Length: 80
Image (cartoon, rainbow, N blue to C red; front, side, top):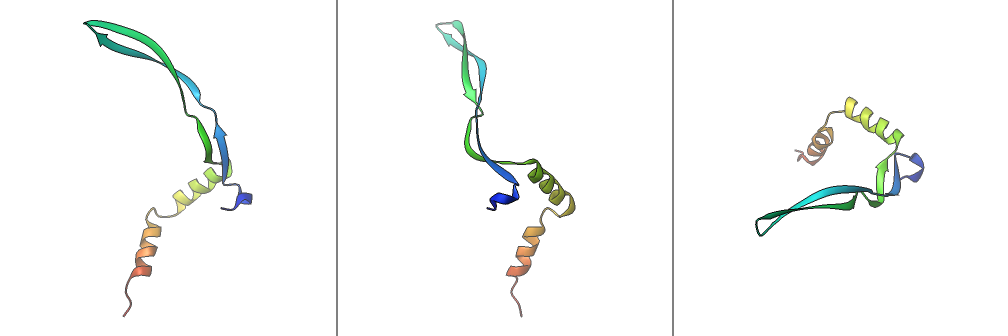
């Protein structure tokens, strides 16, 4: 990976606390508990930069989706 191109950044991100209700049935009685959890935490993941998003959008717009597969199939075709 070329670090100086800047298409992606390697980051760790904090999660956010999410509250939820837990319902359980015990002896015919419904219990309602409010609990919380941390969701969305990541460690050392790659995220696209603004430039990376622009490049990705350009390539998606101007090149066929299966171009890579077509090129590969042409290279693997037996000759003669």
